[in-house]
Length: 383
Ligand SMILES: Cc1cc2nc3c(=O)[nH]c(=O)nc-3n(C[C@H](O)[C@H](O)[C@H](O)COP(=O)(O)OP(=O)(O)OC[C@H]3O[C@@H](n4cnc5c(N)ncnc54)[C@H](O)[C@@H]3O)c2cc1C
Image: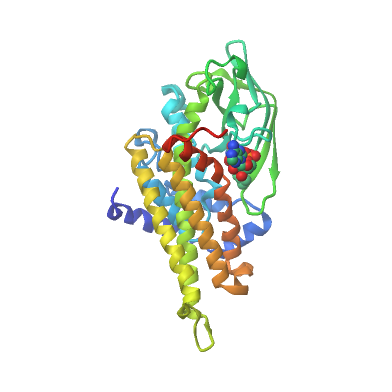
């Protein structure tokens, strides 16, 4: 989609976000409360169903359009982390689910009646080393899998009806290939027994949790695709996640640059605006350039994704460059504001804490660098 085609979408997101100003986010941040009204407004406007095809009731938009939606949310000072997974988690179901599964869940997800926002991959002992995860799903007869184990950092589990869960169905030593033996399930958290969710308080308001499975029974009909192939299915979905989160970082960086530029023009010291000093204006200009460079990589990754081409390297680079750009812009914005940057009412310290996450999650810097070193540059695998 061209910039002209995207303009009305961007304007509509901006208009919606105008109803959720800094005070709204500050109050939630203090209480670590979920932005339910904001998520409801985005859902009702159809933005979270952007990537669901029209035949299932979604808007059937491109990745470029979805990325523009997330970017605008963040550029307006809001935070999409409360619901961004509703956009991309369904991709695994869309690409690998059966016709019956898609009919069962996708129309409800598109309408917002069903929230699929919980993504259970990370565990306490495996972390980034996903293939070592220990949660097991053991087949019990024809109709059920019994799930035991624990997930960590399962964000939005308390605000989701369904969870996309990755669990081991074949012991690692018996799997034919290193990447086989893991399977993906849709868990209906409204009805399932043996599931415990515990919230984790973090440095920013993120609704994240740890989740325990105690002989949790999941119907076999909720297995997505072929048993043992789940890692492959999840990886494809992760590219979408990286592109969308990269777009959020671009939005954050734009917000920080705009705030800093405005303040540098209006704050007068020693008889002139602070922005007249090169020591103040150069860091703002640098943050802007860094953001624009990262933005180009996000656009390239989104274009590759929507043309169906492999975009693993570009999605990783986009996420990394955008996360570095937003963090650099956050630091610059705080510095530009001097002491006022630390005051809650300026929203800078909140956005600063929020954007810091993205060089760690959904994948941390070193792992992106390892990916590029190995898969793009042909260097030996380091782990
Ligand atoms: C707020 C928040 C929300 C999250 N939401 C979700 C979610 O919804 N669902 C989900 O499944 N996960 C979620 N995560 C988990 C997130 O994806 C992981 O935190 C992230 O992938 C890093 O894993 P880890 O924390 O286990 O770090 P570890 O894997 O323990 O790594 C620790 C450090 O060591 C480095 N490291 C590890 N191995 C190597 C190596 N071989 N070479 C060089 N460096 C290495 C890493 O880069 C990192 O800096 C969330 C995390 C947070 C903090």
